Image (cartoon, rainbow, N blue to C red; front, side, top):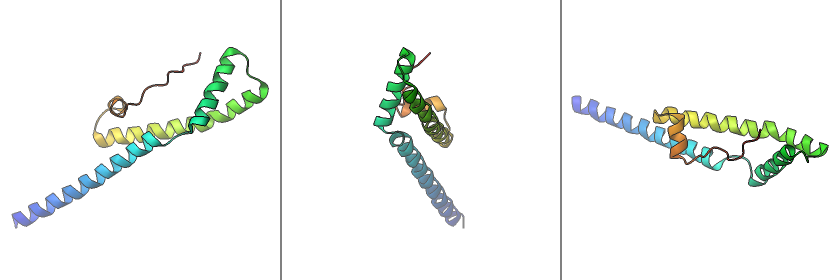
Amino acid sequence: MNDELLIKSNYFNFKINTHLNQKKQDLIGKIKNGGLSKQFFKRQQFLLQKSVDGTITAKEQEEALQMIPISSNWDLTRIKWILQLADLRKTTLEAVRISLSIAPSENVYP
């Protein structure tokens, strides 16, 4: 009876671990491969730099303002996924950031 219980317990643990590993891989895929297009990011950076330089037009300013909620929503979603992954790994947000080679943005504007 104990052998049967042990076999069932091991099978159950295997299924849980397989499910958790798949969930971790799914989150990593979303974190690393999702997001805004390079074109969107480049345009946003261009407009932000023009704003810092004081050369942005009213039309460009409006475009830049419309981009803020789009990029903010992506950032929030990505952070949620990173937090979920940290929870599954039983580690810190910083440890996940380092393990996935996620660097902070180089562009910091005043």
